[in-house]
Length: 311
Image (cartoon, rainbow, N blue to C red; front, side):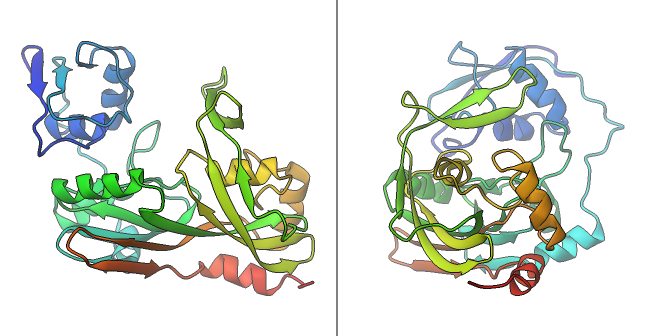
């Protein structure tokens, strides 16, 4: 139990972290559920105001940390041997400052909201490294390339790259419903996050939303669907999924933005998950090093695709 409220000033070395990740380090042993609860109730403040868990902290920010009771007898969840082996074999690239992993579908990038253990928490334990931070995110059901920073300086550098248009080029493979026209190459419509009464987060095309742009290229046509390469120019939540839905070509296996009837049909053809895979990343570092990393399509998607008749 910490005895009193603390007011902590974010140093230049700490800037760029998400608020929830910062609190996880400050409140050693605190479960994610507790951290999310004290943020939600407004007990945690940033510069005297409420803040969301995903808020990126800046140098000079003052974080109010309330006294909390920690149960010393509740150990942090640990990755099992199977997950350890999977993640260790999924490392695509590593240097002194960053790590790129081929994230498996079904694994959240971080814990919270009922998820005890995510990719970043598991990797911290496997590698015995407290400092590993997500540079960007992937949806839980999306597989493929994701970057983690091993140093705060690298986190700041890559966040700066992300803010530049084309600073980090991301390419995805997606299987979409119907025949995507080769003339329909760019979807450029704003997106806005909404929260339903149930608490579910959903994104919609909304003229009052944030500018959002995705470039789509047809890879090949199949019976009733099209394999496309999607390149997000901006980085909004669920961007590829919502832009594909807006184009009337929702992703195969998308339970939030797709159609139940079509998803049921495709499940019978062997597609048992969202068909969205972060296939490659390209960017350059400040020292001139060029990074070009690819992740192969997961076997369960590749196998189902091979069995699908081409057009």
